[in-house]
Length: 119
Image 1: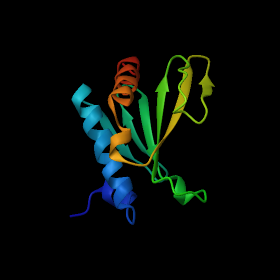
Image 2: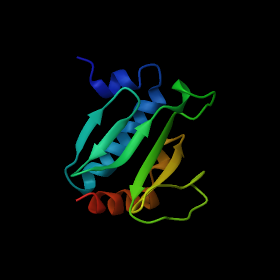
Image 3: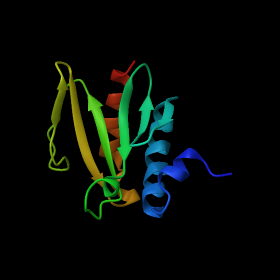
Image 4: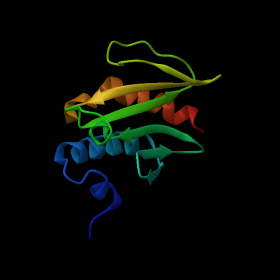
């Protein structure tokens, strides 16, 4: 049987591998709900803290997945194309993922911070 995550990344084997790497990183931190929507896969605790989407569905790009990490403060890193303040206490940090190796220790630390901030 095909999972919702497999259907979401249908036609993008790399995207599915990236999803699995992010899911493994989140699982190593603790339990989280995974919600597969039409435009993104959300990782949630009390609220969402990480969101994975396929930019190729909406833009002309070769990037297989973008991971947006929600944090209560702005982080600065050259790895983020931009950082967006989405609420008075919420910042979204989008990160282009091209290979499983991109889900490295630094990304795991950011995910851990977002996980704990999401209650």
